[in-house]
Image (tube, rainbow, N blue to C red):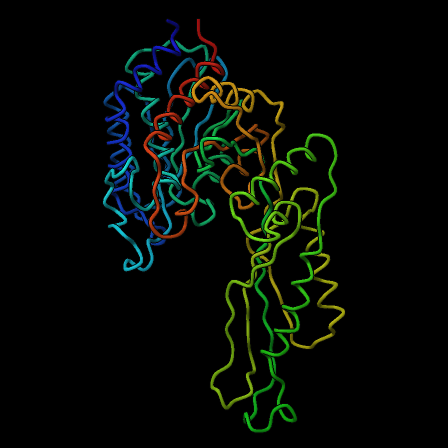
Length: 417
């Protein structure tokens, strides 16, 4: 029996330990905001130290702990695994069928906030790293694990900071974000957040529209114009064209809404927040809105900005100002890269299926690694219906299989004898 099969057998033998580790992570309420990460950071570090895994915590600011752990031979290739410890808030507890931080197993599923996004994937990587170190598996390269505190609020002091400060560099990266057992994600859309402000002139509400200048009405005109950005789309050829096609099929099957496949190759616009005015019987003299624009491969953020400029210029309205905050370009990795081949090969061996490679309709910290020239994929266990919603779960069998895939990828990428 070769090393890979021995490790897979060991994961099966210790599956209860793996699932318990994931449950322990889920029981820690690491909602972001507020983003209290010290307890889970201490827990992960102590777990790794039990197996002799070298690790260090980097804090760009107080209560922003980034764990960097490593195992293997530093002279060879470097394979990074990345995960985030923070989760989105549980929200209205009355809408949950169970305690979101129970971390219990029921009917073959782990229950709780963060099970799919992404403490089960993270737990799988932590478990595999500990197992490799305990078994003293010889690697011709080095496995890294980065655990960051703020992916759910854009990753500025987590992965972005780690990459920009060269805390970790590597030849390839696996982000254990939720993809489902039968898919790996090889690209994602870009993002542009826009804050729009409209200034008007106040007056008594009974005099509108003859007296005063209604800021809300002006803002609505701008928002209607910006919604036309959804007509923008990319043009594709070769490999990207094929992945786009596969991604549109996956989106349609997963989301099951008419026309939803257009999110893959078209710009999307979401008016996320809007507020304005002072009182019902007053003409509002100010209003503002925050808009989330997602941008597919084949369209740049600058092209979108140019279109927004044109929309506002053509409307010729006084008192309109706007600024941009989160701005990231669409990004991807070739499906012919070594890291993609490795995940496909190991899922084939573990699950007996050929997984798809698709582009993600949202975004993640993968973009920071790709921007640094590191070929990066996402692969992790998930039940998508609970992500960022209520009653989040993950299947136990998917967690176990994902851990096997991670272990196999380490051995394939960091050549062993």
